[in-house]
Image (cartoon, rainbow, N blue to C red):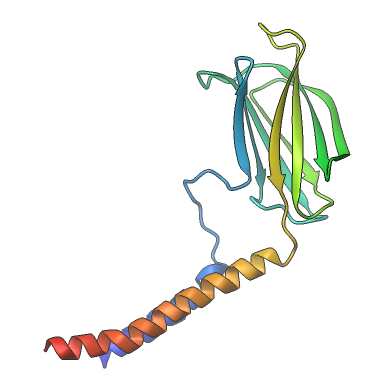
Length: 171
């Protein structure tokens, strides 16, 4: 009977798992990096899948090929959706290797983001880096949480049914 009580508690705890926020040591899904012209540009969004018409953050980092941050750079950004430019951020001078700024995505789906580095030492002209960035509908998080919770509940029910049978057979 103790085993069944344990599994009931286990199932109860797992059913609430999707509501917890956790820190992960993996690279974010909506992130990428590209090396071109002797410089590495890394881009990400937070949250990983931005919601439409809600503020998110655009995270950029510029390093050399050996991951040493570039002290100063000038960068502009162009955002495309369905092969149409939908937004542009004018060239901005950044005094550190990071540039984080707020951004609001207006369309659901895949966007092409072109990042232009201007007047970098050792290069001629503009270096353009191209990235795919995705957004998600407001119901995407609910859907992922429901699927995850359902999978854990199913696992708990299967364990609740079959583990007592296996332990009875082994005795």
